Image: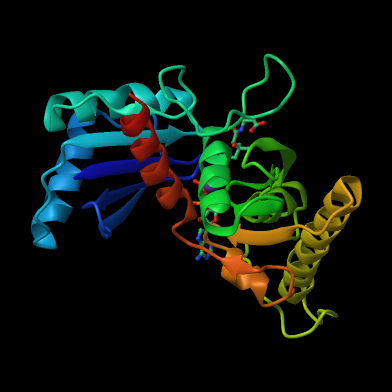
Length: 257
Ligand SMILES: Nc1ncnc2c1ncn2[C@@H]1O[C@H](COP(=O)(O)OP(=O)(O)O)[C@@H](O)[C@H]1O
Ligand SMILES: CC(C)(COP(=O)(O)O)[C@@H](O)C(=O)NCCC(=O)O
Ligand SMILES: [K+]
């Protein structure tokens, strides 16, 4: 079975793929200080508590936080006796290499989302991922990542508002009942929610204009479904998009080895 690890700046997701489906998905806060032993204790208790039978023989990692990769590698080596494939490293091949400025690194999560999006929806696609940052990945007709957009994440924007203004509380993102807020929290929620809908719609409009062709938009990440309530832009919402991409990339590397 395959252990697929998607490490974002906020959360790290572990999924186990049995060759046909994901039999488990667990999430832990990203912390570069967490050791391989700590990961293993956490993972094995979840396996035990949920009575999940998993014989892990291979692993793949995508990490937007370079420092956590070391301990995740140790986890795979020590406890699962395998060498993980790490997306973005030279030994990990992609079906179609990205077409970007020379010397630039693309976030591995964006490469993975590109592969998964192309597999499910074909080319000329925009993948929106609501994570710590909100990313827009532009997928060409042949499945190549050809660039995109990085915008501050929704929670980051809310946090910035709270940190910078003495009278603004810490709030959670929500879809407000009305655009015109009649109290501080409602005003902030409207600003962030409708502001963000506008950001997403505006960016997609400009990308489509630049490419001068229709482009499908799909969304992933925890907040995708909340924003889908405010716009009809998204063709699909796919919570498992990154995990699906990790399975595909692992398969591709085995086939081409
Ligand atoms: N269903 C949800 N509702 C509200 N906030 C969420 C939800 N899912 C994720 N978040 C928040 O969205 C942010 C990004 O989460 P995540 O997608 O895990 O980011 P990353 O992949 O960058 O680690 C975090 O601040 C997280 O707490
Ligand atoms: C843009 C990101 C911070 C998004 O990460 P996330 O929100 O998933 O934690 C990540 O993809 C990254 O570090 N990218 C490197 C720069 C680039 O993709 O061009
Ligand atoms: K992400």
